[in-house]
Length: 336
View (cartoon, one colour):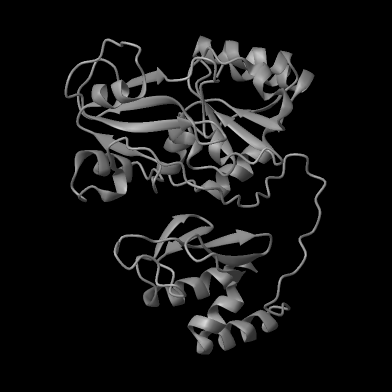
């Protein structure tokens, strides 16, 4: 009955400053319990997130952590009483209920992992740009989550030169969206720049640490849970516990210590992608195959077509396999 929680979060939303829905089951607002930042009105560090069959609330400023019911009791006692009655009518009490175990090997019941945000100066956060700025327009038209994760710079070359002594052939005043790569200790290991407007190179990826794997999202990874490995950093932002391979030269041996599912782009005619899929299958990793009725190119395109993140996770769980079965499906899929 998770929909009851969503109804009451939305009813409460008009009382909460800077309330916004970040993902299907993640909402953000300024914390009404501590007031969030007194000097920065744009700060919003309170989150409603799904855990099992209920929503919880957590604030990254004051550390408050409680069930939705407890939050309603403090913020809106009238709504909390109505919520409790609705839960009772549906056969629940308003208190947490256990989550049923499942035999589905590929079920993705992610638990949020609240880690510290890595902080470096890469330019201006996308969320701090004007609503009509080309970089913000691009990101929001593509429905890309960007809360503190993506930046914009007027001069990508200068950003790179602050981070590495290696000399790259970069042009001056190159306007780009900046996508930083961190390791699990928040050390910067690589940087990707996505062009704004016309460019011969839509993406530029710069390695800062030559010994680190060129993988995006390691600082947010919960290695104890199922991990989705996608092709691009942007796609990984739509899915819980997802990381991205930035390039075709990734050594898949890196993933052997993790419980992973590889999610490649939906391009059966792309030889590079098919070759990488064959390599993953030969090493007996779990791999997802796009159903034939879905024609979108990748995760972001699927989102833009109207498929939400929870539906994508469901599609992945139902179309993941490995071993001999994966080989048979690949031989058919590559002919699509």
